Structures are given as structure tokens and as C-alpha cells.
Length: 302
Length: 173
Image (cartoon, rainbow over all chains, first blue to last red; front, top):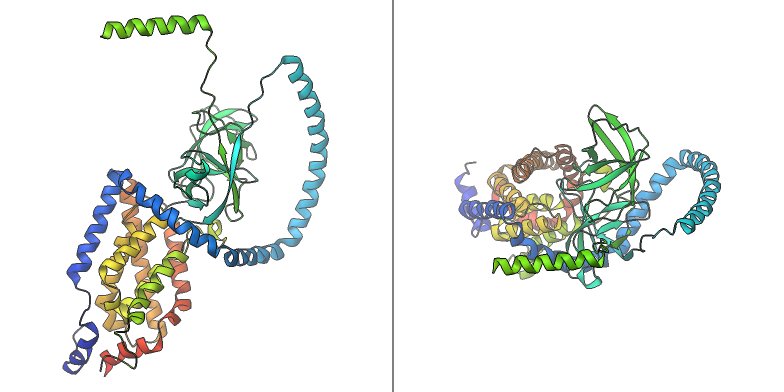
């Protein structure tokens, strides 16, 4: 826009130290270089990322009481709107659950008897660390959370994060005092799963939508809406049998899963300190032979 | 005179615009409990950068916009540099159009911001798609554009009247 003379002279005062186009373009260029660098060598920014997570988590924790009241306000508005439907649903569910309770008690007794009979080795209990969600950190392209526990509390990359309903995601960048959690819905999230009751294996893949997709199910797999989806434990990263959700939609080739955990309700989470049972009992004889062979091979190589 | 009733050399006023952007950027990751319903949070940073690029661009120099953009990237845990890039482009774009926007009515400036938010959204979508090597979902981007535009009126009060007067007297006298 061209200014009149009288305007220019008066205007000059406020833009004396105004930004030059070259500086802006220069820094925009640097930003693009950062993106390329991050794409090519992600580790370059890993430490900075962790530092920012560690440094900002306490700020957000400090902010959390007022934020909680805002959240509970939104929550209450929702509750009031849905109160009748919810009440009806809950009554029905309660009736169903009472029937299930009977069944569960019966199965529990039966199961205990069978385990005693067969001398089953039960999976060792899994330790967990409880943390609070401090930020909902994710712009339009990423689905992550930040929790207020980190390496200091023995949190490690890859550990499963659950809430009281089911799997939320896994640790993706453990800082010293705070860690980022990659949610199941994120573009980069892939989790091996089992579809119950048919026990088909597959992969739950996020695509930034509210409901993630089921992939790599066998061609002949017969799954139905409402089937339960749990972690399979394959690959050893996540413990098996953590509930994830149920199949909510089967359309064309796309199968979508409604998760039990609800991102807006996620407040306290548990991080499972799961150690994949790597050590296999090898019979002594085999082990001895193996070590001999190894020694022979090393000797040969030398 | 371009300088209004306040003393623009006062360090508090010089730091004020950047402080508001910093707070806006931090605010964008606060879990208000609507994330799963709305797909993406509004970009408060964009609103504040737009306002200051119009009223006081010399108080938010490019390196500062860059740093705040990088902070936004780390907080939103996306590609590093994406929002720094978008914020800088938006900053440059708004500064180049500030004489058109300054002194206009609220509605005009709001519409201007709507356009800017749309440009920012598309730019971020293109950058993210290149970064991930695939077309990332577009819906969250539009949600963000709409939300950012919707929260704009809440932010106009962060610019003190004297800043506005000073800026306007520079153009309209």
C-alpha cells in the first residue's frame, strides 16, 4: 500500500526498528532447515524436546487446579445434557452386569480349581507407576499427552500407559521428570492386538482420527461389530491382554475400533513397568553344547 | 507523533507483547478436556502474533517469533520447525498488510484473521504432509482454523488501548 507523504513521515516513528523482510525470510528458511533436519536425523532435537517437556511440566502442573475446574464444568454440562439417557443405559447395564457377576464368580472358582489341577504358571504381576496428565500436547497433526513422571521414576520409552478403562498409548520420549505419551490414535502408533473371541491377530493403527483402524487381519478373519480388542503382547513391548476397545464400525475394508479409554477423561494414568520374559529355561545339556559350539566358532574365527 | 501517551521505551511495555505470545503458546497445550471432541486445539499463538504484527511489529522481532514457534513445536510434539515456519510466514504476511488492517473496524480485522488462519492452516498441512510423506488428515486443520477464528474476539483486549492509539496515529493522522 502506498502512503501519502504526510502519513509516511508520521508512520516512520513506529517502524523505525520494524522487521525487515530479509530477516523474516531468513528465519523462515532456518525453520524449514530444522524440519528437514528433524525428518532426517530425529535424535538431533531429542534432548531439546526432553528438556522442554521437563521444564514446562511443572508450569502446567501448577496450572492444573484451575484447569480441572474448567474441565469439570465442561464435564458437568455434558452430564446434565445426557442425564436421562445415561441413567437408562446405566440401569440396563447394571442388570446385565449382575448376571455377569454370577458368571464371573463361577468361572473364578472353576479356574482356580483347574489351575490347581494343572499346576499352571501364572504371569508375574506387573509393577506400575502412577502419573498425572499435565498437558494435552498435540496440535492438529500429533496425538500425545505429557505425564508428570519420568526416568527418575523408572519410566522408559515404549512402556504401556493405561487408565482405569484400558490402554491409552505408550511412552514416547521419557524425560527426567516428565514424559510424552504417544496415544493410540496418533499417526505413528502401531500396536499388535488380538480380536476376541476369535483370537485373530492384527495391528491397531492410528491415523489421527478419534477411532483407530485395524490392519493386517487375516483375509478370512470373521469379526463383528462389538468384538473386544486387546493387546496381544507380540513383539514383547506391551504386556498381553490389556483391554483396548471394541470394534465399532466395519465398512468396506476399514475396521475401526472404539477405545475404552476416553481421552477427555484421562487424568491419572498408570505406566506399566513390564519386562518381557526373555529368559527361557534352557536345559543344562543344551546350554552346555551351545556354549561349546560358540567357543569352537570363536576359536575358528580367531 | 507516532508515540502515544505511553512511553514505548519502557522495558515492561517492550516485553509485554512477547509475554502474551508466550502465554498463548503455553495455553495451547493445557488440557481443557475437549480434545477428543474437537480434534485439534485452537492456535492461540497465531491470534496473538496476528494482533502484535498489526499493532507493534517492532516489539516482536523475527528471531523471537521463530523461538516461540519452536517452543510451540516442542509442546505440540510435532515436526520441529513446522510452527516456527508457519508463524514467521503469517507474521511477515500480516506485517506487509498491516497498513490495510490498521484502524479498520473489528469485523474487518476479524475477517482478516480468518483468512490468515486459513492460510496458516493450509501451510501447516502442506508442511506436515511433506514431513510425514503422506497426506495427513485435513479435518483437524479446518477445526483448528475455525476454533482459532472463534477465539479471536477473546484476545483483542490484550492489546492496550494506548498501543492501538499510538499505532493508529501513525497511520491516519
